[in-house]
Image (cartoon, rainbow, N blue to C red; front, side, top):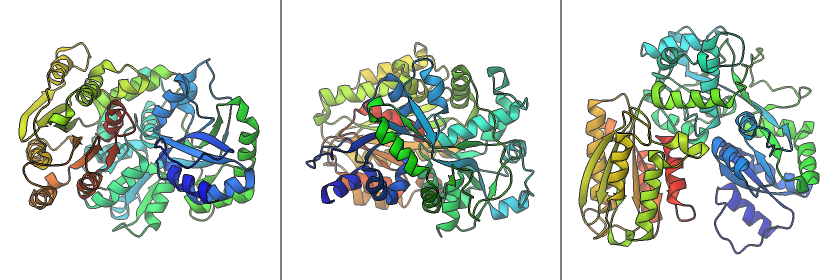
Length: 520
């Protein structure tokens, strides 16, 4: 058990893809999975014992996973919150050979009890998505939600809200995408994230400035039980309906059919369904297993899911370019001498891909968006340049994207590494922009390949950081671990700001920067 346990621990902490001297167990099945499934870790030893199957999980976002499956993957199974987008994306070229739902969790709204009472939503089963839009437009309701192009909860919520506004009772069409009503609703979204778990943590950190959060019912129940909230969340199930995640386990490799069948039979057994419910706060997928007392007994109305990929893509692009609040990311880029050559070329590719050169499924949603402002701060031994670009036209061939692409392609490397002088400059720049225009999502991305050797050190920066205005300190820094950068210092900077670290030592910078876009 020692080797298997060691590998399992690595896999369940998201370390898939890194090299290890531990040989892979012969009974290993490779699974592409949503990151929220990390909460199944307590069940993994029993799954292996009961089925003889060792699950090696590789975690990705929902749309990223769908793209990997359609374009080709070595994974044997896939396990995401939903297969609905994947089913549309694969078309007649069927990659999913079989699928079975394992557990259920509707995407709903958690509202602070005091806010629910003031809005008349407490213990009210007649609250509608339209009611929420009215409260958001009036400034009475500020909420957190994930980016729908990066995470299934935001995706399900966007589809649900748009379908509710269509009010036809049929599946959403392109003509049904009512931008003004959706703008009213999403004017209240003041916190975004690329994953449901990160959104939950960010909500706890920022809860005093928010009124609620859209997320899985399971996560909202866990937040209420976690002891970190200043006041409990009332769970709102909008009257028009919701979209439920059913977590299908999907077979991709026909040679693993026997292992797949064993897993499905075990996971859908009554005892295991109850254990999943207890462990993860998700509802059983079997109707004969009753949800426990934590789950409301009201009838849940399931909204119809769009039957066309064109509708989904049009809705996502409308959300990113027109409906949601615009963003203003600040990229702090290391141009020290060690970046010269392949490293700088990789950085240029990562950024220029975001100007529309990446035409993949996920690339079209990760590119810079209409109304977005992008600031690039370059540094070596000192801050070199600060340049801000405004994207009025998101056409990759248009003047805005072209100007940004030309600037990036002309970057040159040389000199030392003044990481924290540049990061301080980023906070001053972003803080001033936020004070002038607070109705944007602000973030900082710090990319460095080395250790600081010029200007202030990390401790000096952190002292200065504490002196910034509260609105400036609320801006998250997402650090990119690359080359010889100091992992502990980058983790420290990300943690104090409420951001996180992205590891680019085992993945191309282009992939990492695309993932970061889900947090902007």
